[in-house]
Length: 328
Ligand SMILES: C[S@@+](CC[C@H](N)C(=O)[O-])C[C@H]1O[C@@H](n2cnc3c(N)ncnc32)[C@H](O)[C@@H]1O
Image (cartoon, rainbow, N blue to C red; front, side, top):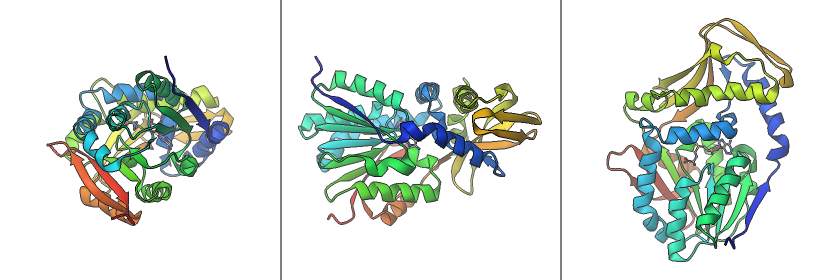
């Protein structure tokens, strides 16, 4: 029997999500070059496809990060000793289970706070978690990184985690703002655990974002289907293709959709008519890759202090545990 309560708090996003999507399309599709935010990937279908991506042989990130967590969760918890774990961009919460198990084993943890833009995913993840951890309070927060981090409630000494190299989806300025918001949530004694994908061989990176089964392509193009489904769009999705490129200057993979013809699409709910030329790229996501020094510099700017790096033997992926800069 489940004793633990699940609370799902919707911090304004529920009401604003559709308008946010419309405003984003109006802004991004009238720019040159055109751009869309990756946050709209994650409707129900997008979340399912992302979970499929994490199982792909080419997508080394999830299994590598998971193996690091399995190896070091106890060590991380011995340092952090959290009363609550807050996971930003929590998704399926698969990785946080490993951390929760380690912290529960030490008897310090009472509350898990997953935060995500996708309410459906949060509800599903939370109900699976209470089945495994029947004395853990789960307080889900639906929100958006840019607007709602400050509304995350505090339940004592906390470990804030941001996994999956989701920080790579933010450009440098967004990453700086994000980290300074995270730092604002931290009190002395709190910790932050950040998962980052390291710069590596271009072929290995490109394969991870353009898999042989075409699941990443489906994930990318689902954004166009979503516009049709939710915003009365008439996009012929078969007239677009998935493209993954390595941008060496900015150390990042970029995902785009490429128009395969000259075409005009209309998006009824946004009162928008958009012309695409043959071969024109619309960027849908960036996935920045980091070095240890780059991450440490970003955290220092946000007044956080690196405590320990955890990485796989091949150095593909790293987790950095950081503390509040005022704490020795
Ligand atoms: C790359 S997935 C990572 C999921 C999980 N943390 C992992 O490591 O496998 C990114 C997650 O962040 C959420 N997300 C993306 N953009 C967001 C935003 N702007 N605000 C809040 N959540 C967001 C998505 O719904 C998704 O669950």
